[in-house]
Amino acid sequence: MAVTEFKRRFGVRYVLVLCDEAATLLRQSNVVDMQNFRLFRRVFTVQGITACFARTQSKVQNFAPALHRDDSWRFYRVNDMDSPYMPAPFISVSPPDIGMKLTSEAKELPPYPLALSDLHSPAWLSRFGRPLWFAFARHSLVREHLSQVLVAVAKSKMNFDTTGNSVGSLAAVMCVAALKPTPSVELAEQLVHSHMATVVHVSRNRELLYTHYPSEPYLAEASCLYLRDHWTHVLQTLLNAVGQHVLDMGLIGEAIARVCFIALGFVRLHEPLLTVAAFRDRIRGVDESPLQTKQPSGDGMAGTAVLNFNHFMKLEGRPTPEMLCAAFT
Figure (cartoon, rainbow, N blue to C red):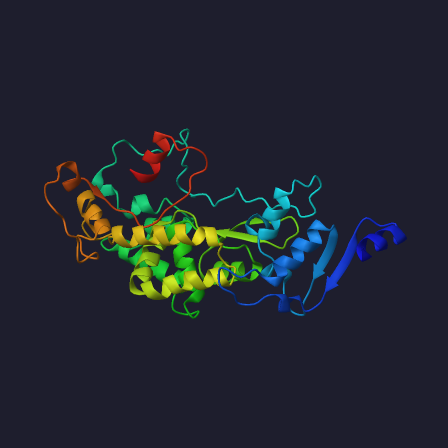
């Protein structure tokens, strides 16, 4: 009633509410609690009130969740309002691979079939991701153990052991599980500055930075080694990230599932490849030593067919056989 009277009396369409020290509306929570900030935003939006949340020496975007993952935004869209007050950010962007175009028209398609001996070669793996890897592979004086050298470079670039490991653990999961966290500026600054993430989009109001990792086998290799040595800490970090609104509840299960597949199927680049049968046994829990490259015999083609992967990646649109051949042959 007070808002309606205010609009009528002063002839305005909107009411502006300024909330100073707005960070007090946020608190550490479990995945069930509803944040006071979201309740405020939902009420203000439905009533047509424009609210400004501020705090000294802080950034609003650090505690304003991305609209496409916010309960307030989903509630708002369900009510079919014609004139949305909150513009949705663009999110259909991803970092490209510098040396490999994953399209059917690409001229960089490998010869089919690609020789198995070339699968783990630095000349092939360095084509994915940033030019950094290709430059190292092209000009390095060390040839015999070049893959190990590139993995060591990736470890140093990811800075797993210098930032308390919390952001480093999240960076490792992002790298291997194709995961995008809440696009807060504070998190993006840490990921880009210290953990090799790439900024792929800035929202129109400059309040959201979307970060992602390209398909970089050497960064993924370093991340897998870190995940293997800090498995418990990584899972705890993922669960804490939900309570801190870094990850959405709907993404945490998928992220953990991908990390579990990586843990079961990961074999270091210089080790023998894993057979399909061995990977299946690991999933079933038959293999009591999941980190060993046990090679079961028989079992048809599953006993001879080999595989190796150290990260997931997202492809735009429906992949064609040519695209899959270029990416994963």
